[in-house]
Image: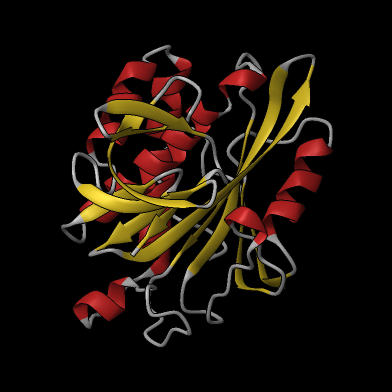
Length: 251
């Protein structure tokens, strides 16, 4: 994992590999604070002892079997209020990577990746803000590759789904290529392309399903995500908008 053959301009051209660390996001954040840090630097480890997930959850991953890494980006012109644009970048990049291996890939709002309703990838984005803009962004990605025993029944991996062993280096290289491609689309001002792909592949989009919000369980249908990253759900003939942590999916 010391070096990968990513066909990129900058993402993955500088690899910081460590056999074990507490959190790749924390290591990447420290690197990002150093003067002249390289955009696109990837911090990758075989074993993360204190990995974090969304909603304050721990991210657990078997040692040496999966991909656990963080990428440093410096979107200095991106306003802090537009932070969800980076969720489009990360989610679309992972989605496109996995589509090269499997079908039935879906994006679960805000940025989990599912296959057959099971979670295969989690994404945690942490931003540093300066003067109303995102000075640097740390994209932490945990992708289940060769692990086939899980504590949670709704977790899965490439090996779990196909029975095959995969090269983590090969997948990381492809992920770096897809991340750079999606990021450059964002930097070019073509947000609509990323947003359309994100919305088009949302888990449960245009399908009646159960949700819980504000202590109420209800049936609704996901319509997409608005300009602020809020989930749009149609229920009882009206559109309702939910911020992160305001709503949960009921199975």
